[in-house]
Amino acid sequence: MKAATGFDDLGDRTRTRLDNGLVVLVLGRRHLPIVSATLLSPAGIAHQPSGLGGLANFASQLLPLGTGRRSATELAEEIDGLGASLSSGCDYDFATVEVAGLARDLGRLIEILADVARRPAFLEEEIERKRSQLLGLLEKREDEYPGLVRDRFFEMVYGGHPYHRRREGNAESVKSIARSDLVGFHEGAYTPEDSILAIVGDVDLPGAIRLAEEGFGGWRASRTAAGLAEVQPAPAERRVATIQKEVTQAYIRIGSLGIARDDPDFHAAAITNFVLGGAGFGSRLMRNLREDRGLTYGVYTSFQPRRRRGYFFAAMQTKVETMNEAVREILRECELLSGHGVTEEELAWAKRFFTGSLPLQLETNDQLAQKLLEQEFFGLEDRFWLRDLEKMGDV
Image (tube, rainbow, N blue to C red):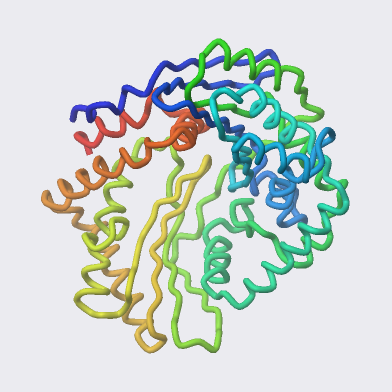
């Protein structure tokens, strides 16, 4: 299959590794005078110490709330004055900090990004303010049973592996996190030799590399980031867990271990997912459980890849009295697909869905920065989005 016109015309690119190990990726897109810069570090939920649930999330949310050079108020005022944006967050494998604004301000944006990522103040007043917010969210979540089901699902799929951890931790762990824990985690997980900086927009490539060197060249790791263990396969037998709540709707999540992002079967998994439940009303589960049986407003499936093994799941809500019927139908559809595969018509439809949705992932600077980071972090082939299109013809 030929790549769609324009997918490979995304501007000049360069990749550089600074002396401290930081990988810098720059993509020039000169149609608009804007720019986005994102730093990715191995500071995800899976990298936090055991017994300190929520630490990675806590630390990532505190990064924009003051540095050794700027208070939280000064930082916010400077960003607002530039008409820019600053955000941070974490997933299981990594954490990110991102700035975006006008291309003419790239120097200041990179300097702010470096200050936030390298020198967070972790002031006690900001820690306590954020802790109060997190505890409020955790209290509210105790009544949100879909989240409880998701947490139990992760425990069953991943066992004791760090991938099973709840993103926000729990009230007890969040209360126990001290400033020294936040500082220590930052020093160990936000390290230049394991981080990637992606700059996308109306930039001069050598100039962007120079600014990255100025902002991050002096960054030195104070300790080595810990590695991540391999995921051990879960028991082969089918297992069921229930959470009892006084509700009229049952929330169902069915799944198993999946694949890593660089698995050679990733494209086949993507197509299979679209056919089963990942593409809305055209998928088998939606036709069966919503249109034919009227058991739910919506059901969906997803393969979530991670650096180690990811996971697959199907999820839906239905009336408590129709829960068993819904579970049987989900399992039946999974078994049919596993045993008989997809039809030629379904395969062609899923390929069209994949190729038609790809342009929507390549529209903005921050989306392209995410693609560059994904390629580097997961060790994918160059411009993998084009290779994904080509491989659709081989699935």
